Structure formats: C-alpha cells, structure tokens
Image (cartoon, rainbow, N blue to C red; front, side, top):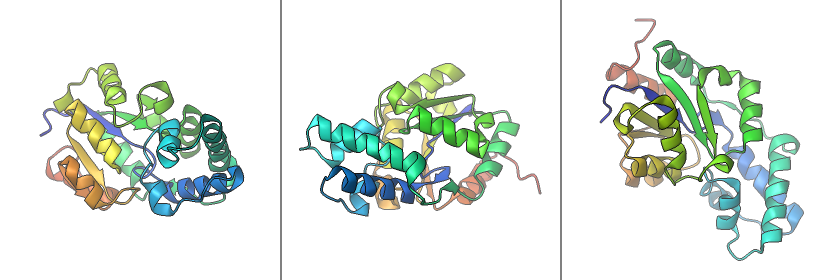
Length: 226
C-alpha cells in the first residue's frame, strides 16, 4: 500500500490523453503505405505503451530492419501530422493534475511516446506545467522494464512505497510491479480490465473520475467543493 505519497507518475496515451484511436489509425495507414500486412485494431492496441521500435518488432517479428524502420517513420508522420483522428485529454484530466499539484505532490510522465511527440502535446494541452519530469522510451529502457520509473523516483527523491503509478496498459502496471511501486489501472485506454488484473494493481477504474474519487477516500486529495 502507499506510504506517505510523494510522487504520482502517469502514463500518457490512453491514461491522460484519449489518443488510442489515432494510434491505431496511424499504424494502419503506415502499414498500407509501407506494404506490410494490415493488422486489426486488437493487435495494435496490444502494443500501445511500448517504445516505437519495440512496438514495431512485436507487430512484425519476421520483418527485416529496413521494413520496420520504414513503418516506424511512416507511423510517426501520420500520428504527428497526417492522421485526422481527433485526440484530446480525457474528461477531468486537468482538474486531477491541478488538484494533485496544488496539494504538493510531485507529478511525472513515463511514456512510450517519442520526446518530440510528448513535448508537442504537452505544449498543446498546457499540461507541461504540472510535471516536474518526464521520461520517454527513446531516452531509457522501454516499458515494462522499470528503469524509467526508477529514474523518475530518483529525481524526486521518492521511495517505491512513496510513489503511485497510473496507467492503462499491462506494460505500465508490470513496470510498476517490477519496481515494487503501487499502481492503479485505468480501463478506458488501450488495455481492458482483464489485461490489467493479472498485475494485481491496487484498483482499476473506468475513468479519471473514479480515480479521483478513490484518491479522496484515502485522503490523498480533498474535494474542493466539500
């Protein structure tokens, strides 16, 4: 269980940002462009949360390096600029971040996104001001390796039991488990409840409102309207 919480680490895509549909659409457009066999939504959702090279390798284990590199480049172009599928923060995301930051908690992001992609969306949403640190897979080891989470704890001076990981994928929760960090899952993103439960998180919520309510019940945040 959590002890004297100091640090809350969020995944990005599928956790704070409703972007799963664009990820799927961008991968499928890139597959067509590169000429690789088209994979269905479920196969793509299964790899969301990994770093891009690891995701592409899992999608096409038999493809050569050149084909994988072309797919990764094409996907990035579609996701950042060419795919019209809308993305937006989940309802309540900013309210939750503002409340946690206002209560004095350190907030961070641990994501499989590229640094370019994360910096772009942090600027567009204005959410960057809430995070003292962020870590992308290209800068460290990809999830579920616990290295990026350990690096963020080191920066915050937080022990595992003073940290909470919030994510929507098996990779997020397994990373936390390996780092001995308590975690909660969100079932509104890429992986469903049945994929999150084997990692034994403290709780699984259908949305950020559920998470915020739970944080109130354990007295980590206070309802400003109360």
